[in-house]
Amino acid sequence: MPHDLPPWHAVYDQAQRWLRVGCFESLVHDLRAVLRLSSGRAEEPSAVALDSRTLRSTPESGARAAWDGHKRTRGSKLHAAVDTLDQVLALHVTPANADHRAAVATSADTVEEATGDSVNLAYVDQGYTGERAAKAASAHGIALKVVKLPEAKRGFMPLPRRWVVERAFAGATRFHRLSRGYELLAATLAGLHLVAFSVLLLRRATDFAAVCNSL
Image 1 (spheres, one colour):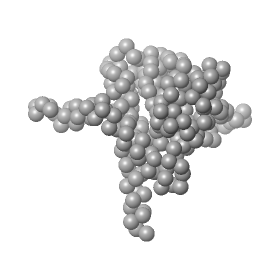
Image 2 (cartoon, one colour):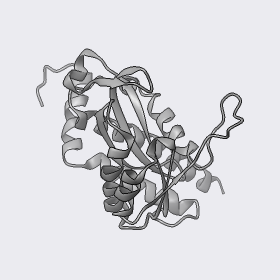
Image 3 (tube, rainbow, N blue to C red):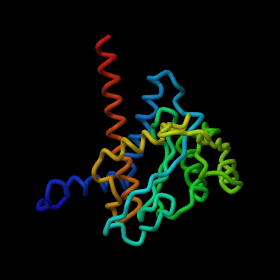
């Protein structure tokens, strides 16, 4: 590693190396399994929640930035799958104008690879309706269950089963580097989310260990 790099750049360069060999991906998956077992759950989940988050573009976003008509924002879209404890299983980045339905196949494929076919149900919002999304998920043995907003909604209301993925996104936004699409490469943006989720899961693991030691 060059010795004349500023401290942040040196750390970033090393993180890039770890991302390329899958260190943070493995760490996230291992911590998820440990935390699920510690909470009395099976090591691998049977249900997940799918959703996406749009990150506003920056000059570094390059050609990946696109217009999200629903959010009225130009940027990139992070697609994620989390278990019912809001622990990430899969994520990937697309331009912000990518359709939710088109992203289901990639998310379902990654979930299947990460869990060994244990997942058979995915909670989604109304952006994932339609035959295309259902077929993409069913090809991996996953059924989509659309959680709809109540018709008489007033103010903010967390959606049953789906609020966990929103909590996961909220945790990621606490990391300044992930507040916008600062990365040129989609793989780097997705990878830095894995770094953030590693930190969050390590904190949970530390809190659990502290409770166990106090008993």
